[in-house]
Image (cartoon, rainbow, N blue to C red; front, top):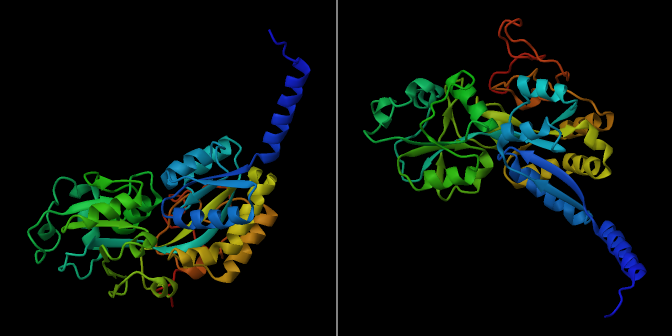
Length: 353
């Protein structure tokens, strides 16, 4: 029997271990919004191309699902299509998680129909409320129940699941109340599933982020939204910037765990995101913020300035120019004590004026 040289084996194991350490990649963990996913994925790919020793993982479990992981300290960055909510702020505080809120782009949340739908020329928020609010469940099942002139055909609805920030924003904007949505529709956290569903049904209607519409406009048609001024407006960059695409224009965010910034790879990636965010947002067809906003984001990062500008509540109809003008706080605003008003430090704008 051949004897094994224990010293040689031990030396080999040490070399293997040191080699594994040398080749090990640092990891930046991101998760959250499917709406933000195209931007985050594009930024991650470019960042990894220039930083071969860093792996950036980008999950897509929905804004709510992403925040659940983030406030437990399981991720470094949470991608969000709405601001952090009161319960999430409280859970973060309980777990000692401090976060930096960084707006990265604006989205024109888009209502879509099948290309074969020729009757839906425009839609009001009242129409959307009739289709989507909780009282419509099991009752409003045909198009002519929304408007008499629309056809006597079944409505097939597609939308994000309740863990989605898109679901939360749309429900408040269209139905006027948090969570006031019917449940008898086809729900998915994967927007590509919603695209497929609407594209296969002539009488379907759905909603999701603008980037997913642009990528599939050969299959789908965007429906003009009648805004507060009574004008039917198609989603698009110009309409978001001038404030006329309301109330379905909304900010998109990433939230960075303050403690994670102690890791060089996370800090470097977050800084890279702010320097490349405008370019990547435009590339995937979202609306970039003004250059001054990304400069302010970098200042927040460098100062490790924690908190949110929204007091733990969603807000609809926010204009792009107002986004960076608000102070940050880690305190939840009690809207009942505030008279039900949305947290704001600037007067609301009308159609961008």
